[in-house]
Image (cartoon, rainbow, N blue to C red; front, side):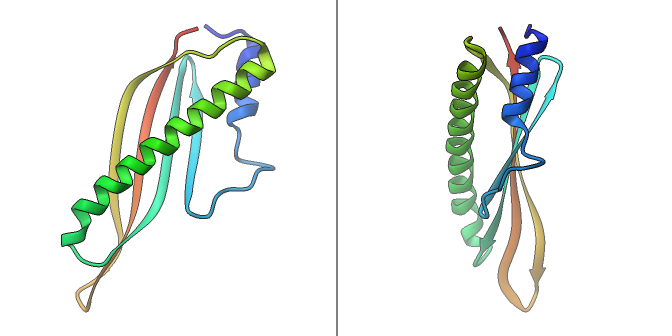
Length: 124
């Protein structure tokens, strides 16, 4: 279990609601609930046709996994700098979704939102 000082430091690190710029191509939001950290990755996806959806969805899943791993590495590094102790996260859940937001029978182009939610348990 984290101390109050460590919890505040982690909260400062994962806060992206004020004072930080976001990337235009993707977004990674984090919520902290008890001893669980939920990371929510989202990006817009544009599909030229329905046939391209399956291959591009696999690519989006790989890209989201890489970005989440990078984000976790950054959070752990900053946590160690701020508190002097390591942060141990154990993955307990992983789910991705693809939500269609724009489609037309006149055009094969599909606009979707790809989301990945990963839940980690803090095991300090």
